[in-house]
Amino acid sequence: MPGDGIGPEIVAEAVKVLRVVARRFGHRFEMKEYPVGGAAYDCCGDCLPDETLAACKSADAILLGAVGGSKWDRLPVPQRPERRALLMLRSELGLFANLRPAKVWDALTGASPLKVEIVSAGIDMLIVRELTGGAYFGEKGRGDGGRSAYDVTPYSVHEIERVARVAFEAARRRFPQGGGCDGDEAARRRFPQGRPKVTSVDKANVLETSRLWRETVTALHDAEYADVELEHLYVDNAAMQLVRAPSRFDVILTENMFGDILSDEASQITGSIGMLPSASVGVSGGGLYEPIHGSAPDIAGKGIANPLATILSAAAMLRHAFGLGAEADAIEHAVASVLARGLRTADIADQGGVSVSTSAMGDAVAEAVGVVI
Ligand code: NAD
Image (cartoon, rainbow, N blue to C red; front, side, top):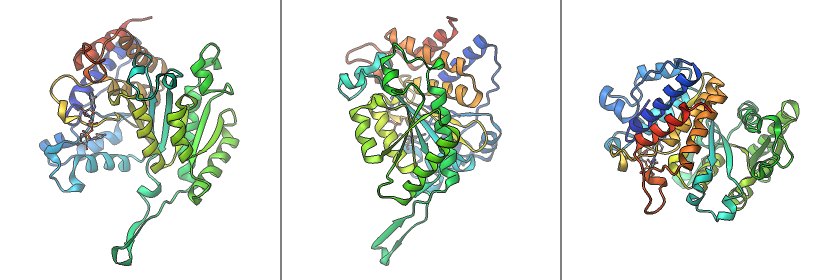
């Protein structure tokens, strides 16, 4: 679903890369396109038309560009693209876990706002955020004639267990195959005990829901994931460690509101919003894959948007929805190689450096994927 603003430009590049993956690895992807967001409102009077929702429900996985723009800001709030399309998709598809990698690519260490000695230690983490529970969805209201307010933060064992399972499974998948961290300083920092690692973030010194969170994560770990190293951090400490020593993290597991804040903090330390993919997975289906950025109306139609976050979202889709790890690796290696060759879109170009267009970047990645190593 291309959506609005730069959405059609960046999704076209991801589709281009997927077609090359299909050719190189001998697959056939059945891809169908549907309108969503403001574009869907313009064509069908609804930011999430029934036909689009039905297609999402029956799809094996969904690739989304972005939605929204000032043209639709005057619509009543419940009908606006972000509310109607994004929140509705999350709830209709039961997307309870959001996975956001935050990685600094070797070729782009200069883009991070952190000191070079911190960044050069290696930053490559995945934040797994619970997406449909906690304060954002709990009972809320006003008392005292409007002079007091409350947002209840409910969590159940079931909700905690299912998102914790996503984090533990992701940690196992991310651990270097064969367990070899030898010779890889960054991997040794992330996995000091030589095994997959999950950092669970809560506020168990203050909140009862956090105490339930910690008990439940620990019990699931002991019963099913004892091979994974599990540490617990309070959210205030986690926020500090993210800027002090981000190289120590691999998978961070946390509840909805803490995850909202920490995942934005983590994405900022990479310094390049146009590079970051995300995945949202649910009770059924293969999930929804999209860049973390919005529709960037300020650069839409200029052919200068960075398509890499969307291309990397397609890689995440191959890995998580279809179990095609080698194909996902091929895309990620291709991205690393075009960056190493110095190709940059305007958002990641060095000051005064040369930049390439959206489609030239997509062509370069597609070409690099097509080269069998
Ligand atoms: P934005 O992420 O669209 O843009 C922020 C800044 O980053 C802009 O300067 C933009 O040009 C730049 N940028 C973003 N993606 C880029 C890319 N791929 N390449 C190069 N530069 C890029 O955030 P915004 O401006 O606050 O929001 C614009 C619209 O997008 C709003 O309507 C907002 O509600 C919507 N939005 C949608 C989503 C989504 O669809 N998931 C997420 C966030 C915002």
